[in-house]
Image (cartoon, rainbow, N blue to C red; front, side, top):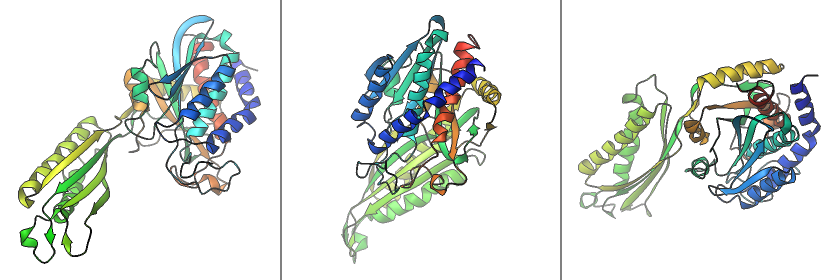
Length: 397
């Protein structure tokens, strides 16, 4: 048996423990920036393995450090651990015990996989030509996110490369998606208050109708992508909230709008914000209204290092029994992008759909979301393969 095969075997021997950890986390989810118990649990797990631990990194982040017996690179692996404000609708014995909060994106699985990986690496640390850093990140789901704060608090100090994985229920088990370059979109959030002058519905000429102006904004903003953005550049502007008024016969004094902007090109991202501001300035003049705009710049575009992706394809192909694919980029967002702005690395997807089990076919962020727990071992094997390439058999690649 090869050394990597031995590492895989050790991981598989811990499968029940990894599943147990995942189910414990699933039963006790916590929202972004509120994950105090989860962070404590993760830290305790690492300490039980005699791994050096830093707590409260950038907030609720936890960093584990495994030092090898020989000099070499420092490779970081990341897992997020926050949950979502969703009421779970599964019938699992391990369903959420926290009302209105659910692990509906797989972060419980990511954390369990990284802990399983950590146990194997810690046991074999004498083989490492370098070090492993375990990034257990809080608050991925809610901008400004936890990654940036962890970086500012030194989580990547001394790190040469960083890797992250995400379970994907739209991919079958045994599939790994790796893509070079822009892979996930930037995400911004805008909140707009249109301030008019209310009055009686029978006397519109005495008012400045906020609803009419806000409705014009919703229509105009859709033309940014269709008529301002180059058609070959992926971008989305979505208005998700629009509310105004208190009665059928009163012209509303104010209207409120919220939405999101997504793009794969940073220049397009900047241009869309400018166009939104131009539209509002035009409406101010033509409709005699005023406005307040709160524009939150969220996560940047996630850009995978092309050289690292080529290496990952080679690494994962050599494992065997996995289908290595390259999908189109998506307009979902991930604050792992901040890590990749600092050091080379890659973010990839691991299939978690069991084709014969419909319970694993729901999309992420769905109240019935679930995944095949065999994917926990697949993430662990992917991480072990990367560690083996850079720190063990591959020397200092």
